[in-house]
Length: 632
Image (cartoon, rainbow, N blue to C red):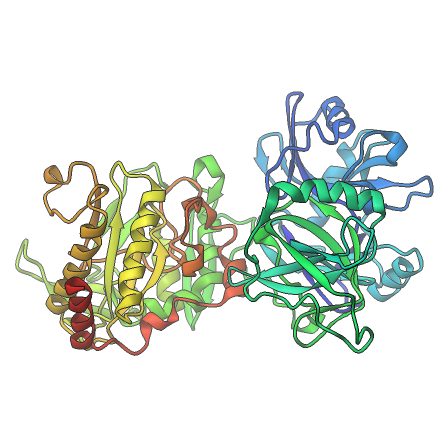
């Protein structure tokens, strides 16, 4: 669980305060004497910080605990710069400050209130252990606690709601971090060497990621010794590249008010794989740090996780959206004026991942503002999993006499018994949560609305692998994008959440399903012509030879695919997640987008899929441009 950067502490009741330890976040997994010590990006700390690993082996508990690995001096003050190259006690005293417990004796306790989790942790902590230490939580006035942190020159404080649950991967408004000075993690994209300088290098060129691109945030020329520079230079050598990794090449010889005539500098560009931490005075309006100083290297997260942290006022911090509390098995909630009953809430829907029906419903409650626009006015095909992903499932189309009286429906005539029946229509948040209460893990809307049932809002290219790898699916998506881009056709990609990728083309309900299908057939044929060794457009499975199927037949009346942001009944609780095209590259995995991180991603990125609901393409013009490509 992650904390939101805030501008100030608060004196409001209901908050607990902890010291923000200046170190590496680490989870420890303890089970019958076996120990795994893991960083935020799941790297092993077992060997790097072996004394902590040994101390955990002696702690006879079966639990998962959360804390911070820190190097402190004799006065007990953390020294971040000593942590990266820590080898033994001569480099400082190694401590693992523990502040939370997630599992205990095989039971998930993340839904318990924070105070209860901390009390359990404190009671189980080893006595008089110099390495494993309990990170105290103080119920006091936040402003006073922050002032004390300033006096002690600590990095900052952490504010946590006393009743908060623990949501892995979520940057919650129920956990806040307030820093005593401006600090930022940055990715190293290069370094400079000043003309006439005897130093190994003059400054680091750094940046942060924004929408998948590395944006330059400035030069760091202070904070490191000559020895550190030499060590860094050795790490830089194998990472040297010819082109800048930044979205726009920075001017390394740019003059400033304080340095109107800077020494001439030459830039060496690096693969953006290393991360360091920087302190700085302020951030300029164009996103460049003023007076930055090197604090130390970080190896506890991946570069793609490094984004600009912008503090928010406590009054503006959004509370984590939780509908159902962790206690009662049956709960009734009023949604949009309608009373909904939720039952069997502790039933494990993803047993291997210990994710319950309650967790699923809370996810859909949080995601509803982003997801409902893709469901509104669309008939739904209900795919129900009453006993989770490994239990029996069934499709339900007809809700005649079963749906609540307030729910909207759409009539249809059954081909099986020639009777009038009704689809449920995804009108609003209440309908979405009603479907979730029925065990609908995935949400499957039509591509058209009830107002124009024969005119879809989008055309779908469904890349469906058989024995092809996911990297090959990504290759097919990139080829599709190239074809669309060359013809000036907008295309928007999302993961299926299962095994493939979906590419949507906005139609704005201007064309029929038949026109949409034939348009998709042209695109699928062009993609197949470019990569015939790994793709097929054969409808019959037996004729595909286990190649990836470029499915254009999804563009037919009543056909459905998983909606954007829908969960899928797959291990890992994967989500059908819209992607920036920059993210559609080899190495991406389906499990990168799941129930734990989808909401945080949306809060940061917004709904990048929204254009599929907007103005449709001119299909005649688009086909003409595609034909030109074929002739060319």
